[in-house]
Length: 458
Image 1: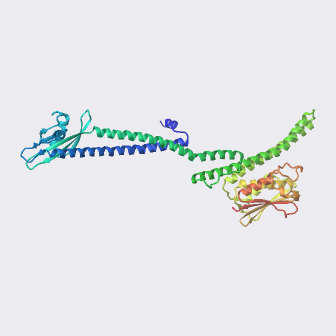
Image 2: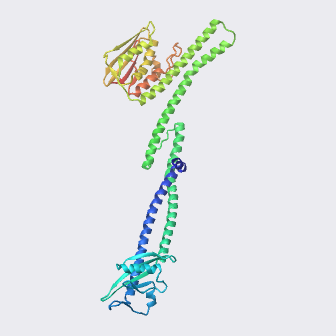
Image 3: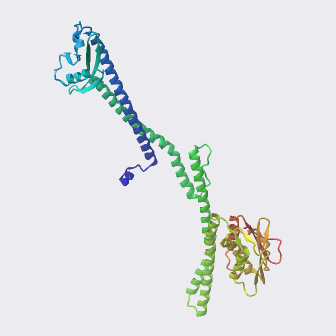
């Protein structure tokens, strides 16, 4: 049953709202129609009883109860007064309508009312023409009593009630049809801006447009919807921006190692090669493949860790154990000594351990790569946070390259023999900024390079 109702239910919001309005209007009109016809029925019955009372008063003027016996006086309009009138003296019938038999249902009902002597009324089903209303009126004289029972055919009243009921049903049907049509029209007009906003949001989100809905000159509901759609468009634009950035970086950075692989394979297949030449080709291909792997890992780690850093609340991390673990993991060359120097061993930073590793790792990797003999990783508290410095005694950062130091894919000397992709420093800075920190280069340091990482305190 539930499945059938779901299949029959309208699939559009306009159809559902119109159906709800139609159902509500139908219930309300049904209640009003029933109540109106009940009131009308009682009003018509009251009118019939009043008519019978007036007729009984007129007949009472022809009944003489002053003597020991009840006498019915003859009058000029006697035939009009005798129509549908029974006169009783006690239980004895004095007069009855000429058209009514003594054993008819109406006469029996009139006798029953006369016997009660309490002036009540009743309705009797008399077949054709229909129901008849009977009312008894007790007359008390000085020496005798009588009861006048008057009758009234209810067919005209019933016809009036039926006509009013039919008119009510017709009017209800017209009102329901108008309600449904007007509701669909009104809801359609009300939802038209929503459809327009939906189409615009779909178009804008596909191209990362700067267009926004705003809340000015909009109803409250549409303003809230516009604000929600604007927020979604902002997030969509950000995601598209990250996607374009990742795609562009992958395309740019992978082109060089792929070109090396293609060139080496073309050279190797140009003529038969010796074993030594084949091994050299394999080494070049393996080196290029490793560079591609490094580029992909760096870019994907950037995307994954950046999203987590934005969505996850900062934690608290002991700095010294993380730095020591990183130094041990990198395994500096024999001629390079890497040391950790923490002025406060229990120093904590307000970031997660994994995020701290991702921020410091590119700085440490560059320092180990370019250092001549020593790499120092130090940490000390600063007002409101923690500063981690990575210092090496290498050649330092060329002055002409300082402005491009944190640009993705840029390297000071691409031909220096190292397999870096120019993505580590931008990655470290982006991750630090997600938690309110910063990664910067210290231009005042001489005799090598120093990079500083400022993070919130734990």
